[in-house]
Image (cartoon, rainbow, N blue to C red; front, side, top):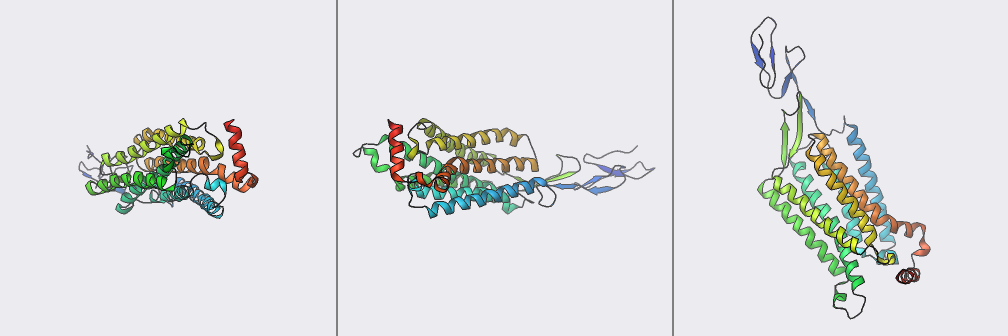
Length: 318
């Protein structure tokens, strides 16, 4: 009687002896010979998901570049000036990098891409969320320091917002540096989870490091959401808070839903879940925060006048 090894075997007809297949191979249907296992990862050649993600990523990148160019061309207009131009440009640049970072998750993973994908993703998204947090804090200070002699008045400006972005992003950079120095991600071959398949994936190395990156990003997002929600009813003419609230609601919803989906899948589908979350949250930032401004700049230029904005501001305050 033929005996199967733990991971497969092949035998010969009319023979009682069976030989175990190597780990990278699997017996055929007749159990007479070993055949190579199928390699599984998000392939550019074979997976339609990869093509879809690539198209969405490139489309989002092009739209972000257009938005960036519009903001630069209309640099001195009231709509652009009213909500901290420098932070807006940094946020658009980070959204662009978020869209492009998707390509690190596609294709066959190697040690270099395994280390870069999570670290760059964590830092770039932290820059994005830090920019949103800086915008929210400046809005809070600006509308609570209406008196010219108010002690908070000196904190309203680009210096304050730039410090917030640099400080919050640096903390994430430090977390990533510790992660890479202690236990960096690496390429891994999972030969036994699925019969007949070798899953080529990235092992995150330190699980604590990976979830520390996600946790810190979630902390920044939660603070931004709470602050923006508190000041969402302030006058819209100079107030990003309502749009920031929507963007952070999208961001938090996507990533909260992503965690159980990420933990319950394996292989290329686990990567697909993370890519989907990156694309969705990047699009949420772009649409919720910048599309209303682009609408005024490009389609309603008559509203992009300081006097008009001031009149709208007075009406909403009355």
